[in-house]
Structure formats: C-alpha cells, structure tokens
Amino acid sequence: MHLEQWQQDIRSMVDEWVSLGFLAEGDLFVIGCSTSEVAGEQIGTAGSEEIAAVLFQELDRLRQQTGVHLCFQCCEHLNRALVVEKQVMRAHHLQQVSAQPVRKAGGAMAAYAYSHMQEAVMVETIQADAGMDIGETMIGMHLKPVAVPIRLMKNYVGHARTTHARTRPKLIGGPRAVYPSSM
Image (tube, rainbow, N blue to C red):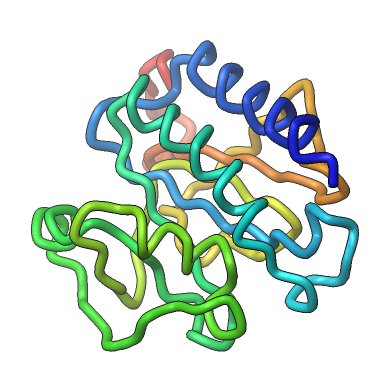
C-alpha cells in the first residue's frame, strides 16, 4: 500500500483548505469518500479501514484548525445518510435515523468515523457549508445552494479524483441589486 503518500495527498488538501480561509468555526463540512477508489479499485468493492484511519486523522486536523463540524456521508446502501456528532444534530435540528454504518453498508470511511467521533449518530440529510468528495461519491445533495467549486493544487488522493466546494448565499434582486464584495 501507499498509505504514506495518500496521507500526504489529503494533508496537502487540508492545508490548502485551511489557508484559503473559506471555513469558519461551526460550519458543516461534508466528506464523501470511497476508500476503494483511493486504493485504485471500483467504488464499493474494496473498502479499507486502514485507509479510512489515515484520511480521518488528517480530516480531524481540519476540524481542529478551523472549528468546522465534520459530516461523513455514507454510501447509497444507507441512502447517503451522514455520520455527525450528537451535539451537531441537536444544534442544527437534524433528523436522526436508525442505522450504524459498516464497511459493506455505509462504507469504510463512514464506519470508521462512526466509531471514532464523539457520540456519533446518523442523520438523514444536511445542508453543509462546504465539502470534499473523494472518489466521486456525489456529496452535492448535502450542500447548501449555491455551491461554488474550489480548485485545489492536488486533484487526487491516491487513485481517487477529488472535488471540493464551498457555498455562498443566493444572489437575489436583479440589475439594480448591489452585492457585498465578500461573496
């Protein structure tokens, strides 16, 4: 395996997210991840807790450095429900669902997060402020409208293509509307 290289890949992405300054304390940050794709296999065929552990360590560093709340998306076998901490569920009035992700139903990354987060619960859906999709797991359904793509220097973790996005408020009005320059 190439765990050290894959850890460096995700570390670089986390460092770039931190340096961009888009994330604020309390933001919801959704992560979709196929550890199979990271390893060069087809999504859903070779989930790895070992890969999940390496990625989780770096993603937890993102949480520590920015104050975001990590939300780990499960695979389609659990309807793309999410693993969050119970306090996040309560603070955001999210709908809890009854399931526990495992490698074969939910995915290795979500299962690892569920067993390593503080008071992990499953919720049906969120409207996240930003996110990272590792291996084309389709996180878009969990982002607030209007998603804005983020182009990072690195595009891959291992063999898995990554996509990154933040969100911004909707622009309303028309030709006479004036918008803040911070969007």
